[in-house]
Length: 83
Image (cartoon, rainbow, N blue to C red; front, side):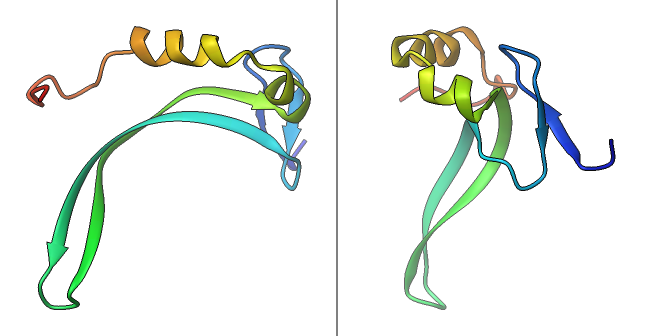
């Protein structure tokens, strides 16, 4: 049981460490230019796992469902304004 990482949100199958899986996350990021390194960088402000799927369910997952999941889950930080 110690090698179980998580379970699939669709079929409830155990996902073990080292196994292939699919995770869909919502990240709120801030892009900026670092003048010290002269490189563009991105800082993750917030990250939230929306769904975790085993390899089998991930490969069979319908992409239109992904859009519905992303639209249905609001960002945690309501102070962030839409552009």
